[in-house]
Image (cartoon, rainbow, N blue to C red; front, side, top):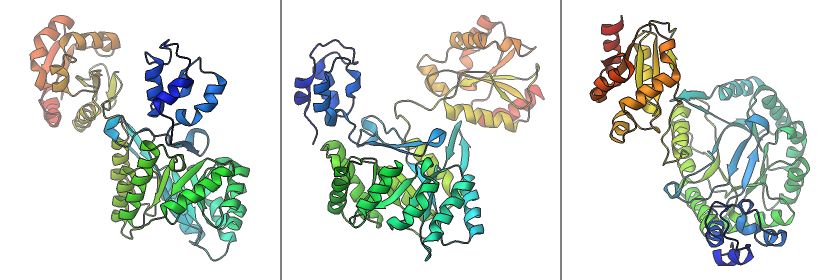
Length: 445
């Protein structure tokens, strides 16, 4: 268990300088104990105190990195049990499994399908981050061959699933520079698997048949000096697995139980692809940092990745787009100009309907801190003065020869003032984005 706030306070310099971002050393100590601050924020802590406070200043769930370069993803490093307490930080990695027992052409076809699991939605890019290669073939050498084949044909991160250390040792060197996750160390093989992980500096998954067995193996591995770990409690029945995940997360965050302070991973087991996705939804909601599925059908992944993105956004910060002049179609100096807010759902609703009108147009999303039209107007963030200032700042008058601008119908009251401030003719558009196509054809066609 971690140190209490008062125990931490005794080790601090007690300057109350505020340079750490909190007004007093006692407040800083309480944040350290709660896992909501790091010791690096204090510029005056002594080396002796730093060593004594290392366990208290470390996050309750360690950060583990899968992969290298631009593709690297961070797992763990979370501080909350419930999203509404603050927020969750690192989106779980979604991986799709490929078995080494498949014929080479089938492996290649599945890898191509996995590479194609990329989506653009409301200005966000969603994608699968990893390929998990599982050893199922009767020939040990098939695993190394499959791993190399996948690595040569996919830029995604790798999860190597083989519990025989000899099989893993044959496959790992060829891809070790990509820092794959090695799966898995267990009570029988942990020494050999830990040796491979340390030699190649790769993250290591630890599998247990029960929470007690998992804790025992983790303690043995950390005693060997390795802590880049991902935990798999081993349960495959989803209700048992969710119960184990919840218990591990609670022990790590509430009790500061360091043995369980690592990211979690899960495998889906349902035979029906849609049920697989539902299992993955549950695992993502209940603390998995890595979920491995078998299905690679594109239609199954958009709802899963959308759910993941929604869960891991800051609940206090709406999703927003950049305040700039946006172009829809091949615009010219005669193209219409639409005004809206920068709440992403509002903006992309407007953009989609403007595109449906088939009239190339400009759209200016005014920065309203991510609020929708009526909410922003009620909060004083979508007023005529603000719109006029943004139009001038962005220089829309240099992009079009006309002087007409369209505002949402729900804020028609802004028309007169905006005309006075800008000298432009203000057209009151439809109240709902769905009315834009007919409005555009009647005004601009």
